[in-house]
View 1 (spheres, one colour):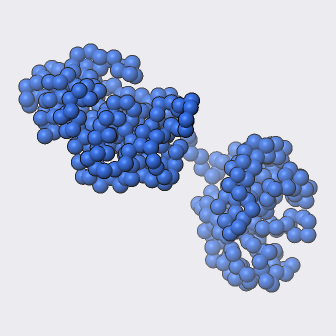
View 2 (view 1 turned 120 degrees about the vertical axis):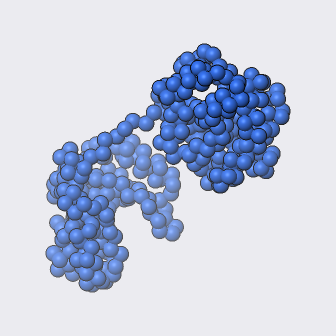
Length: 379
């Protein structure tokens, strides 16, 4: 069926050889246009059958399917009818009336959606569709394509954590057409050379910039805060970035855990407010790989605590007071979210008051007190 389908596509004008300008501006010696399949029901049926077969063969887990607009929409519709998988549709632009949704159809956040596309060159159209689906709360990890032009699209999609499942590669088409005398060897050679030497670039907005990974030692040299420098140096020396929260109620248990884990961690977080036998001797024994306490005691940050956690509810004043009560090599972590049942810290608080607050309205706090705020804590 597969080889016959390639020949039928050539006969119907879906596969052409010559000189063609692609959407990317690249001049190609081969052009595959599956839009003509809407006028050939049998071809459309066969393409959809191969897509459905590929999904089953590759064991793709999916709750929904979505065709990339516009060429893949009729293909996805046929696949939906063959597999009984519900389909959603992505609009290229939201309507200015009605629901104004980009994704049309019935779906629930967290459902898995497979993207269906006719041809992958750079992968840009698939990524744009996946972004819209993800923004709607759906999960996209796989794309089924009829033809992979082998010009970098599959590799680009992997950078976006999307696996490509192709029915044909362009070299498969060449092999079939050569075997059936539909093209001459010179044409096949030109196309192979084109595929080998010309890669299709992603649209600029989708190109991921390579970020240089710095060692902890290099990071220590780039920060001016003495606490951050010390923490990075500890991480470099111990070769670890593990933090441990000692949610224990006896001092002896906390100290025993610190002795065992000390060589393997960079931060030891204590909850001294839940210690049943807390005494002034405990801080002296607790110093080691680094400590963090839930609350500053008696209105000041204890000298033995490198970090304290602070709620942002009171606003900038709490950090100003903390700075006045702290040493230059101490700091705090703002609590952006809590996991306790019935917490009054709502999602709106976390996303608005803290995320935008700390790096927006509260950005003023961080900007004014950068030596105090060392990070954000979310559950």
